[in-house]
Length: 63
Image (cartoon, rainbow, N blue to C red; front, side, top):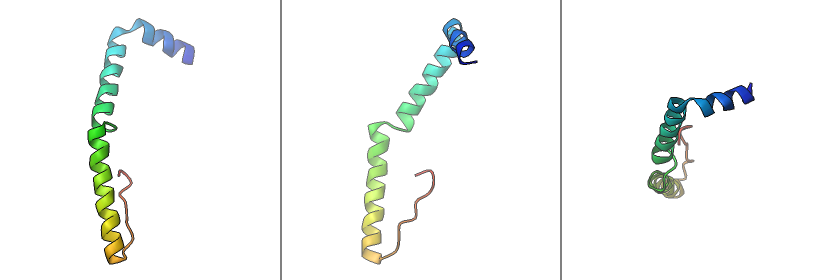
C-alpha cells in the first residue's frame, strides 16, 4: 500500500503541488514563529493571571 502511494505521488504532479500548498499553509498558519510567539505571549499572560488570582489555567484543547 505504501509503495503504491509513493509511486502515485511520484507520478501525479497535481497531488504533489496540492500537498506542497497544504504544507505551506500549515507552516505559515500553525507553526510559524509569528504564530508561536503570539501563543507564547498568551500563555505568559495566562500564567501571570493565574499567579495573581490563584485560579488554575484552563487551556483550550486547540491551544
